[in-house]
Length: 449
Length: 148
Image 1: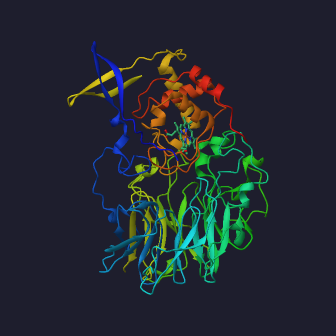
Image 2: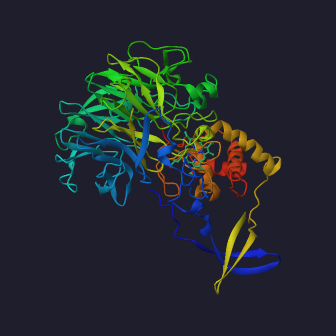
Image 3: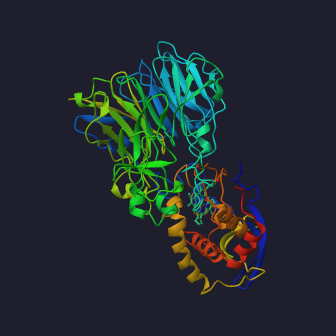
């Protein structure tokens, strides 16, 4: 990794000014744009650089259906990604960048006001995935899965001695985040994202053909199943549970159907790579971000096809001879539901509580992190969606549940937003927790009649 | 290269001045001059770079880096041309990691690369000297395209 901070800050130069020759020290110190790492450097939210910190009220900024309200559990907490809540109500967040040397934080609200007032950090590794199952807290790096034992009060027994459960997973910069879900039978499911957009010989390069077959699928681009309780497993100990999935940051074990649901991040750049087939407007909308219900052996078709939610068809990928019309058959599983392109679903949870009104029961909440690949068209997403379910299947139109993470339509359109929703979890009292990984906000959303 | 620099004088006295650092070798001027190059470069940017680096050049958090006042954009022109020609991955930009992919663009002509880089180096608050087709050509000559 390349160091960006140059030791050489001063440099001698001969300067000519107003006819005077001055010899002096020339300082380039002013070059460190925007004052360094702490302030948002303008790339993706945060106040635009140079602006004074506004006292925005993160809790009241969210737009929620009537009867719902939000409090912030923590704010300005860093890169808070996925989140899980213990049976005792303690919240655990995973950070993709260490905060004070720690990558996991336990947030406890001891006085019942919703805010965390007892905060402890542990786990010296960054990452995205975190989940609780059967008395253990599981957490990921981009290569490994660790677990910590919890006691009945959701306290971590050996915070400095996690058990390594899975190791050596492939991480090649792109779609690197490993995310996890667990069933009730001692199985651990790990998303191993494809380190590629569309499995071209040369990634994201115009004219480069698709690999045939796509070698990436041997070790990534799918969901791998491991034992939840066995130490030091590698690829050989696991099993490719589902393939043809580009990257599924959001995955969740649905207890009512007893099956794994995932949200795939669909491919990018249809217009950039194939301007003769798709214009920028179509390319912003396509392909769909798909929800899949997986079973052992599922194949969802990436990179050979994508789902076009406007034509309701499985379209042959252009890297493999597609023209935007040719379709593929049953070799690729149908999605359970489809959403507009590039909105980046990063969090998924099925609601099993009784606090929210009846209509939410067994339905899915989906956190859409928000798009970048819709430019030059307006960006989209930055909200939490509710997808109604009936008899274990998506039923009826999805609706935006929690909105205005962006801070307004203009900010959403430009992508320069206040917050980006990422992780979701349900508390034992039936409240819904949402993280933002731009500023490090955690909201607790509750309902009162 | 024209830059606003802080000139520090010994004795704790600092004087702010605009300094024109004349280049030792004047590269051949772009057809139509720098202004025309910037206009053409904007077009190349819209078609080839905007998707990732965005309209405002500020990129996408964690995915694609900003092109505003980075050491790459304002720095050595050869290194910059090489990034566009051969791509880049896994390099920190201003202390942040980016998980997107900077694809190589060898299919662009020397002039197109010169234009887009001149545009980038003179947009969104950037101010740096123009890149010429001759400079890009020299870089291309020393770089064989990556394998695969």
